[in-house]
Picture 1 (cartoon, helix red, strand yellow):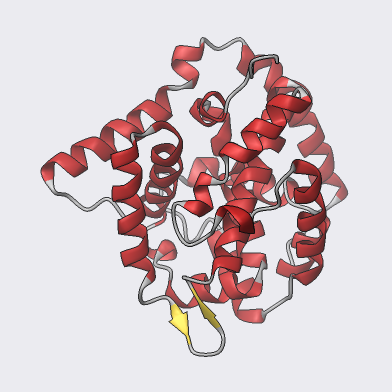
Picture 2 (cartoon, helix red, strand yellow; picture 1 turned 180 degrees about the vertical axis):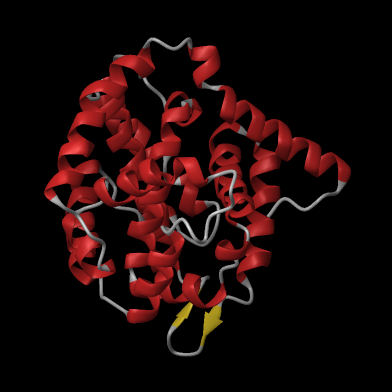
Amino acid sequence: MKETRVTLADQVSEASVLLGSGAAVMNQVAMLGVGLGVAEHSTTLSRQADRLRTTLTYVYVMVLGTDEERRAIARMVNKAHVSIRSQDRYTAFDPALQLWVAATLAQMGIKLQELMFGPLDAADAEQIYRDCWIFGTALQVAQQDWPQTLAEFDVYWKESLEKLRADPAVQAYVHELLSVRATPWLLKPAIPLQSLMARGLVPARTREVLALSWSTRDQRLFDLFWRIFPAVYRRVPRFIRTLPARLYLRDFRRRMASGRRVI
């Protein structure tokens, strides 16, 4: 049997995964239970940079950390989730909602990998998908809850998109999140690109549910970016491309050692 040439660790280590962070969030909150929980409890609008740090730290630790580090950050996430509930509406401990959140990370990761480096070998794609299960199984998602193959995942994904429902509160939250007004000054220069990626990398169904604009000009800019950027990015030495992942892991380990807040 051929060994896997591309692993989830290879993929997550790349700085290019940052391009999909906003789009993954858009897909997540388009699922009503997730969206309401985020809109009603998240502190992201008041601390965007810190929330980005905590989200990326979870992803990096789950893929690149040790077993002990994975267990530690999972406990922190579970603790943070305790208060995210609304009777008969949603709870952050709902395995179905957690599966959807983890599924958006798997879907976006594979999509970005192929946009940046070309189509994955079928065996590589299957293994990367299975390795992505850790994003959910580290919390309340059981292994048997995941679609067992990529083909089954594709069916799950399409069926889930049909379950997305619009909500004014979630739409308002998303529009504020993508606005320059809500962004710290240090991050403002990145907003146009992040907004384009957040709206362009998601399915049309997600844009419809969240009332996200998408014009002919947006599509032209999006297509132009993906014609030019991957070739430029691949010329950058991998040591530099993996720097954000290493820095986030280093920050996580320093916070753990000093007792500072991680999540």
